[in-house]
Length: 340
Image (cartoon, rainbow, N blue to C red):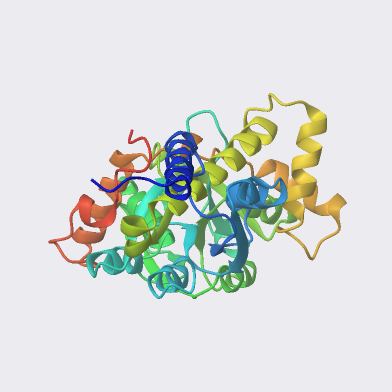
């Protein structure tokens, strides 16, 4: 057997020490990893914004650059092409199809409907409201705004219509901004959206809140955290680091604005933080009420509601928007977070 000299022995000691630290550390990966994170300028994406502003990403060795989108499906394409490393948005037909091709994976949960917490609203345009659309029961024959076929807006509209025994005319308008314009002008009759957008529109009289999505889709996992299939399979330490930082951001947001257990000063600080990313074109005094009113639960520790995900997948299949052969395992990597 070859004898160990002093230099070799010191190297072994160093390696063993590093291995021990690596095994015990929750940030066992190379620091200063550059990643792009996809987001929408919605309060519902606040966990990522908090993680950025409070240094949680940096603590995990992640140098984050945000890339902002105006709809879910383009974000899914960006993740699959690796222009974006991690993203948070609603499940769409595009995301499911990319997962089927081995290009994307859902790794956690984000925004969720929860009993007792204000959630997404069902809206009617002022013109439709004055013509009698005062509750979801009158939706039959009306136009429903969606970004694209296979979007979360499509899913919500279809589920609401089914429970009401209604037929809807889906109208794709590509972007949320375009939908808001169409609602204000009466080009479409109805839509559903998160409260921080719905409530100001209702208050201004341009649209009217006529119901709650949670009454039709209880415990709906509205948005998820996802990444490329390659990241999920081969960049596990970085993916875990992202989820840890994201979860810390979610915990701060929930405590400040959802559960309201952190006190008024913390709530004010949180609203100011979120305002750096949401309603940036409005003065703080005008943006603050909408941000506060739009606070929905973000899943603790990025836990994923599998019942909701399976229901969404079944709906996409029933509408022939994705292949029947796609399974839950095709879409979701269950190894990262709690499944509930």
